[in-house]
Amino acid sequence: MRRWTPWIWSCSNSLHLVGVRGNFRYMADLSSLLQLGQQMQFRLSEIQSQLAQQTVTCSAGGGMVQATADGRGQIRAIKIDPQAVSQGDIEMLEDLVVAAVAEAQKRAAELYQAEVRKLASGLPFPLQLPL
Image (cartoon, rainbow, N blue to C red; front, side, top):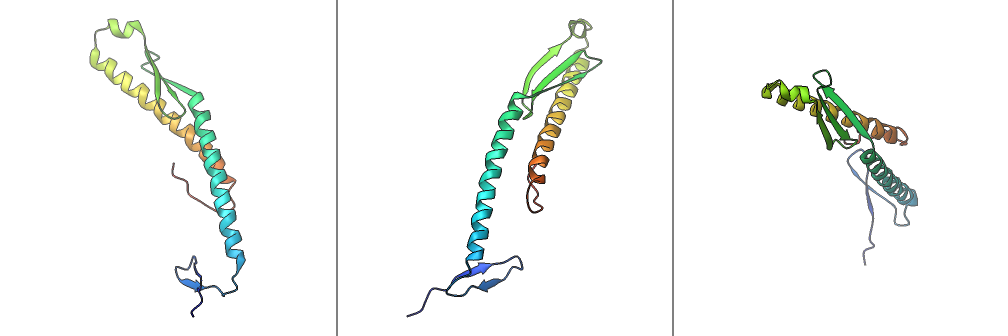
């Protein structure tokens, strides 16, 4: 009767045979890696909920239009100065709204990236997190 023989996939992209009695170091490494992944997932969800509470406000046209976004990039408010409406230039007003929203979302993304970089800097190996 044949005995089951475990195989390990290594970084060199080749399979290595592990002795029948086993090398439990690989299992411990895998266990710690899974635990690290769970901790990162928990911390990332904490960061996302914190970012939902933070806001970023940007303006365009010298403050005629203001856009407020949360840390996740969701637009929460837009304020338009009444003078901008009274001028009658709708195209300019539309452009100012687009510019203020784009800047608010850009700053929210920068805030998110900074928080994720802090999380990634504590890792024991270089890992690129999706930003």
